[in-house]
Image (cartoon, rainbow, N blue to C red; front, side, top):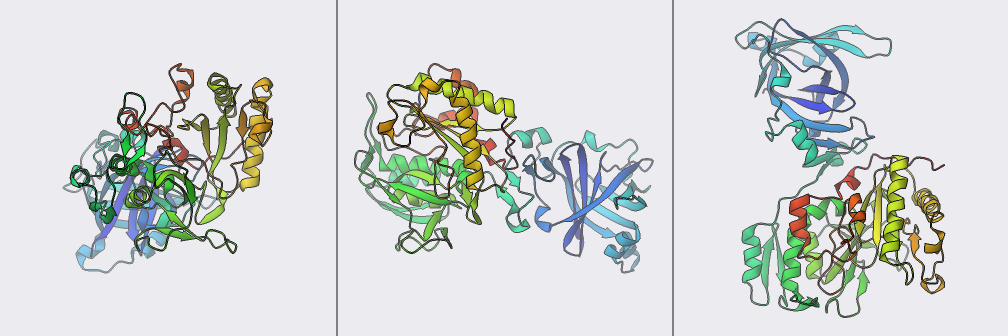
Length: 502
């Protein structure tokens, strides 16, 4: 049986092509700075690098900055290969030939065809092996053939720039191969699925994202109307949830989810639901917290597929609050959080001034962070971090940053815990950096009239006089998302390490 090969165009510290042959259950790999060629007069330098897992074969997307290989990757070519001597009837030990330093082989790809040779030229004192990759003179040889003249992916047809701007997948270099690849996009809900929901009277069994859900009370008002608008019914809320779920999925996957439930609507008193109820369907993803003490929540919902979020919405969860750590490492956050709360005397304009000071601080520190309005009264800032520091460390870092910012405008800020003790001043809340402490998810509705959402914003929108903390709703956020894309996506890049604050 022919074995597979793949060539990935990889823009990390420098542009290079990763040339990989499937041998004995792994991808034996060489980095080829100028890429393979069909020109037999050209010899390409190649550097033998570590083997890669087979799961990496069709990876196309981005590797977070700060991780091994950080950059963008496309599947530049792929196909099958076989050691050349097999065509003459001899069995070849490909791994043995690589170890011996010379391998002749034939490629049958989308771009590369014919006979190639890899030969080791020297091994440096560091142990790094230097090789040459060349094409033999055969029917497939092409004089002057250059990889850079053929820039598109054979998987998606996109260029490296297009994949970088809108990646479908992310590879986490520090994770086991089985879960290193993260899908950044789920398939959207279909028009037929939405039409089925719209066609029910007040209840029905809805097939959405491949799951069957019993939905009821579809015309029930869940969010009161804003002036001049219609109230939001459960049907509209479920429609929004199904539409936003693929965008929201990367922020929820592999995280315990705390649900703020309002079964009778946002005009009533809600309550927190953490434990997955016994009547939940068997397919619902969940996580058992091994550190739960007696009487504490044991089994949490984990939205690893979009239908799980629709189930939560149908269950009356109007707000969605994911943990800042993942289920495999619950004591290691992947975000550090800042919650800017206004007071009676520190109003919205003053809060914007404090948010802009945080913006300046992040620029000075060279730290990536993303803001969002809360959908209620405030602003939140999420800072992606590489797993490693615990909650005590991230809380201390955020406290130091916020106290530095607050010292510039001390007349606007109180550090008192109780709201009644703050004298109407705002609060820069760093205390959410703790296990099982959460902030509302991006794009989550809030329980208020008009169904406002916690909406990601660009930093420069802090200068827009029209910006309001509850200015985006489930009706307006979807057109904005189509127009501007997901402004929060940078928080998924978790290779960042927090620098010292001096």
